[in-house]
Image (cartoon, rainbow, N blue to C red; front, side, top):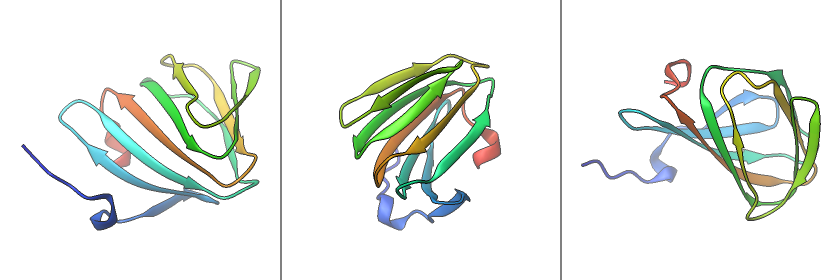
Length: 106
């Protein structure tokens, strides 16, 4: 059993305007994002299943050329290899969960 506190985890800026803290379990990666208004996530894909949960703000997500504006309480399941991108309409906070673990985020 492992207990953590997000304030004790190093925050990284992987993409301009996207700050994140990572928590890794044996099989999954949890990403806790703080995103500046107007910050853009470039189009990409990965072999991981991803579940995104918007906690605060508005985030426009495009998956396989379909765009949707998400707000607090919105949850989206992105299948492996799906091409996706996004833009933070307002300052936002998002949790992403990846399966299997994102070794590239360790």
